[in-house]
Image 1 (cartoon, rainbow, N blue to C red):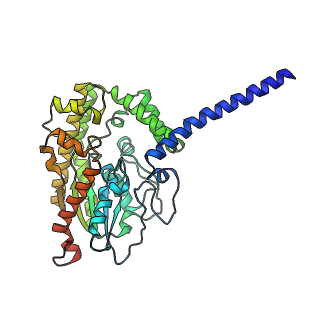
Image 2 (cartoon, rainbow, N blue to C red):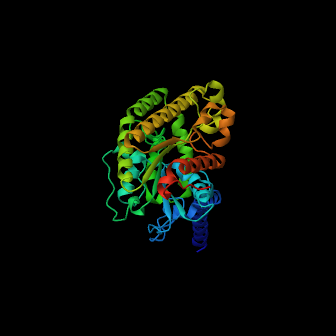
Image 3 (tube, helix red, strand yellow):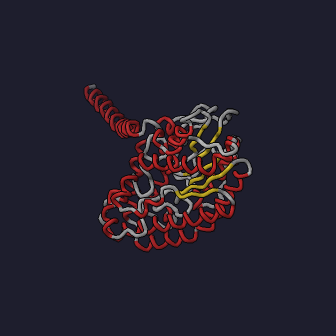
Length: 377
């Protein structure tokens, strides 16, 4: 009897310890993620009102357009989404506020998606994709198409103007996932499993684990792998031109279209000194050669981005502007004031992009939308 009682106490303590450990592993990361990302936490975690389109977007919006509103869509990746920022500090939100300074007739809908790519944007324009399709899915299976969701697409938002901001995602495969077909590193396999598992995708624990594992995976990439990535970048130009042309043609039938490009942290002229200073942006591994290769890849991607966007915009007869791109001629110290990492702009950077976009639209585009020579003073 005494033995059974001891066993019962031990069993209860063991179960209690397991509940405490599992609860801590799940609960602590959730609280940490909530504290750091309170503005998007509930959008990431739970289903939304079916009458509103939220999900992976920064701010709720409705399909129905008020006849009094001038609707602008911003289509892009994480640089439009505003990765790492509160939505009130993103350039689409600031742009809407600037446009509505004198009146309340403008509505700017942020359709930026983290990791967003032109292929995904084409599909979303025709019919809303019920789940996120990462660019790696297209990389591994270019013929992949989503199951028909029966939901309206972005085209049904009936905008007056579409601002397209494709950035780097369509030129280069992800630095880590792009090598997944041949690299069988355990960290990559675990990250891939968590990305494809709906339960793990809902856990903040997975978010932090993936950050650790991706760092481990990137440190195991060999120099020859970077050479392969550079080849992939050079070979991706035609695919990006084709997808961008298709997206522009799809939209310009029913609205005005503007294509914009944003700057990156690195300048092609940056040398060893600047690369060493950039450790906090691209990882503090201290491997100068590895960091130089990463900088070279990013600079090459930016150059191809610009060439493709300029050429395609001219060919399709739509506006194009490289916003704030003159910053590449400034010192690295000056450039670093505007970035969170080599790609993502910080709050000040987004403020400048919004101001430049507002000025460009007011000078070149709004007269065609508002009629005659009207602009916003």
